[in-house]
Length: 430
RNA sequence: UCCUCAGUAGCUCAAUGGCAGAGCAUCCGGCUGUUAACCGGAGGGUUGUAGGUUCGAGUCCUACCUGAGGAGCCA
Image (cartoon, rainbow, N blue to C red):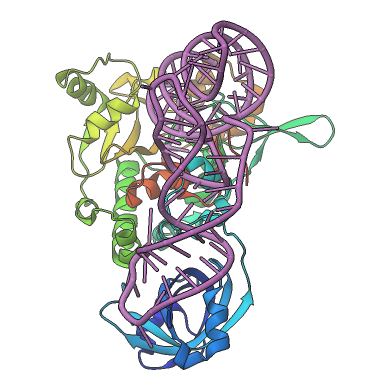
């Protein structure tokens, strides 16, 4: 019977066929220990000369790391095995050999591994991270689908800057025209919300900023919900519920992967509603009290975000930033027009911003004024202004960066490991 | 873009301005419970590139290339 390593406990005592690759091999003369991986897990296969005969035994002795193999054998519970089970090999089939696999069981540098990312993802830690990424994405989709949100995807080719502030990747669009890769689906999301009520988009986004930090990729995945008739309070409630749901799901279904990563589970278990909510003013005051050189009116730098999140044991919502440092479409607080009805969610443990969003301007005249103030080409935003001409309502939403969430949940120190093939300032291969 | 650091064997790293080294990987041999297995042996080098200082440069100086960490910007 063909079996997968993740289900091996169900096959205790049975004869199974496992199909995979040789992860590592140890030998003691008349007994080989072959660690097999099949994409679902790792298991040690025990092979004796007695059981398989001299020829097969000798072939296995020369088998190199990452050779493709099929193993017929009997599953046996064993206290000594890390996963609790081993397989006694009856027959070993070599599907194809591997020669001089570059990633050895010893340590390697980042540059070397990144150049071989297509092979690095076979490593146990990388597999654990990518499985958690899958779970995060699945949990996000379940969350929105269960709440009646409609997935309405937004274009990746866009005619102009969504926000006009950050740098875009230009691409040749047929003959004369230049198109740009999207940096946010939000503006289209607003149109979709006016059509469908509650929507979300989930796709890759692109930023041509020359950022060179562990928190940035030039291509990353973002989920962006948008709700008609929603105010800032509802936006914050939704963000909080989403984060709680995602963390809870990973804790429930990906214990094994978190253990491979040696993640401190207790820190994730504290991620429960309600999250502390802090105005920008209060956060600024907090930074001053902690002795950081922060002045009201500026945006928080990475050390500032860390200092704020250190005060709490769960994510924190910071709301009502000065309008001057936020995007043109952010709605001013009617009670205090110099601040915007916006929110950032900062992850604990210094992982920084994972969510940014808020309530959008719903007044035509104010939006037009902001477009002009930001020197944006009005004609490119006529369709966006239409949303305020034809039945405008209060609305809002946010964007959550998938890789940042995965990085935080995994407790790893760099975003580049949270996506199969990271795209960074100086790295586009493989 | 700016600041800091690094580049030596396939990999990870040593080497006071004075003979180019180790562990792992590879190949050969040994071992019936290993778990980054272990033990013995062998092969493996244009010290990132180009100049310069010096009797002598992996080591000091200059420029460039590549990468990493941080800043800014952002999710």
